[in-house]
Length: 283
Image (cartoon, rainbow, N blue to C red; front, side, top):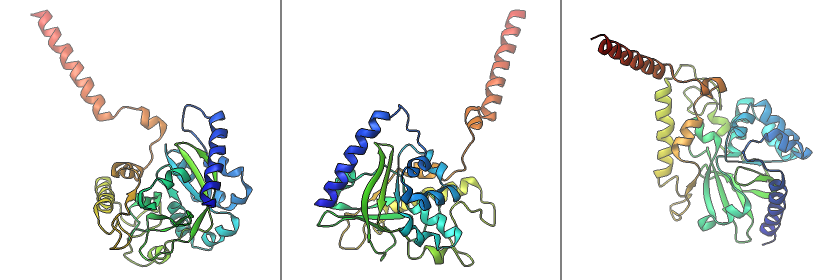
């Protein structure tokens, strides 16, 4: 009871503080948020080093599970490519705070992470297993079968309902197979953001990612942590949101510019209409 009450009280205070300075947009910078808490300097530095800050800042709803400097040693001791994948596991693609987590049915769920959108996550490594114990202690672990659920919620660091939530957990979430799956020929789990040896057509890549997400949502294995508890569901954004986030980002200028194909069609249509009107007037 005490951990949940403490987390809820902290959340209410942070919500009141953030509402006093909130703007009409969901813009935020995760590095600035974490810079106010020196104990997360290593985690904050890793997000910048691995180029994950923009991935977080560009989303409308996001939750970041952070660890302090002492617990971050478990991440920094890993190879660089694996570090990025592990960090992506700590980024949940929805807004979660203690109050929302407490409303999850059966007090357990698989939460979708940024790593899941890459198409490189296998064996549920792109999911985080959330479970609330009988003592109301909230804990997290890798969604990979057999992984421990031993990282406990420590406190709410920052929140901006319902856009950004930053919560401290006691230990880094590292899928048991994530290090080994990054190595070896023919491995499916590539480093997040890395380029494959062969250029893959965007359409094929999109179909693969969408199919993987849909499979996770419909699979009995993904909706339950064991055969005796089929009530654990996958929480996260729709499949198309995960699909869109896996595509290369577009620049602001590119986003504003109309598609070249549409411009040609419109100009051609206007030209034909003008020619018809000219023929009518001359007849």
